[in-house]
Picture 1: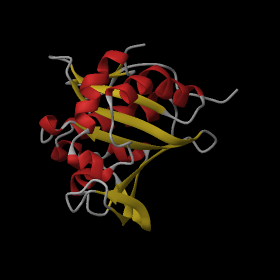
Picture 2: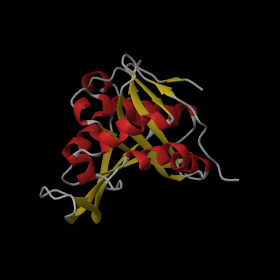
Picture 3: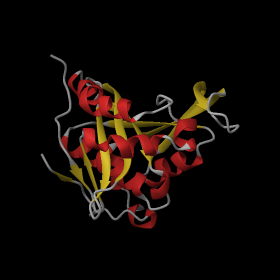
Picture 4: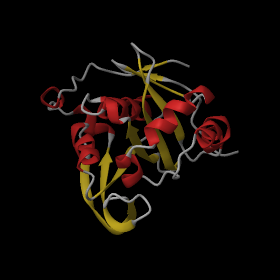
Length: 211
């Protein structure tokens, strides 16, 4: 039987990361209809409520059970409103390494939700699950995603040339073009930097598990 992540939830200062539920489907479909999400991700287009419900009901649980990773819905503590999605994928259990991808709703951008969510997952991976490496891949033109990687202390390791397909940069979602990817990594020792306070992420802001 393949190793897999437990079904769990992660609580940060402002956010709850939990398994997807079928009633997330309307908010999820609305979030994924954003032009920037369509441009920088490989999510299906159109991303319908039916597909969102299937993702919550079967695809995400199957992804976790097969040991490939885990999908979290990101919600605000105060409003329970869906603000994003975080996925771990391409998990290598022998290496204790995995890749993280994240999406933030258009209305929630600029609030620091993406780095808070990614940092919470990183701390959970390193401190609770014993992982030793977290990778991020950002399209060369996706400066917002690169800023997230930098804010949490990610280290740029190089460029994967022509390794991604970008949709809709010209305004037409159906138009595709190739893009370089910037490879970032985060190791457990990268979270112990005294520069945490300067980046706005005090070291005592730790996740809280909610099994």
